[in-house]
Image (tube, rainbow, N blue to C red; front, side, top):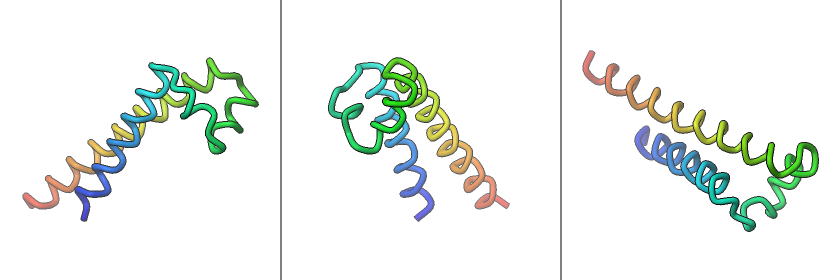
Length: 73
């Protein structure tokens, strides 16, 4: 179960990064992202989603390492 949640975090983080790098319209025109795009503009929203994606991937890696160390103990 832990690996499923970690995988979801990593995939969603990667999706956010790819959407920001390739400037996908469907991503930035979705209802959930419109709040950020309207408040800070699309350029800063792209930067925000890159940082958010990196944080999500880092969280997945951190919990993966923690689960591995707990299993070895």
